[in-house]
Image (cartoon, rainbow, N blue to C red; front, top):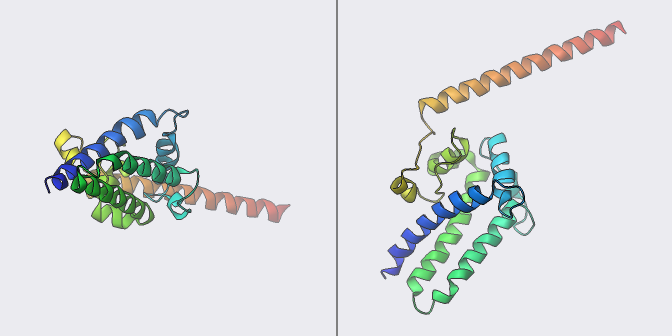
Length: 189
């Protein structure tokens, strides 16, 4: 039974390490297999307020969700040889892999749910520093490593929201002026 808490600690540490060093460390290089994470997933999420429409696609495919699922399957398979000697550890790791996929997908299909239930992951994507808050399922290892940076519900988030709203209002006003100007030119022509 000691395998269960060991697997929980191992999974949290692994989630943090893989996200920081593989998905971001290698993923920022366009030629890397892992580039889907930074160049597709992060781009979508920043543009769409934590929503990532790739999670609406079928799981099988050569896109960010498909590559993530393939990577998680590989991670689970890498632990399979431990099943006969550490069944509780292995089964807990497998459960954590499934749990990771489920909550990560849900968080990017329902941003309000993510902000409420996984604020550390919401903070990773929507906060000012996307190179912090590495954990997805629980912030244990971020807290241990000192990489947890709260954003959701802070004064900084409120200021950023107000800035984005003002920018959108200016864009809408410019578009309305352009439309009115085009209508005047059309009437005169």
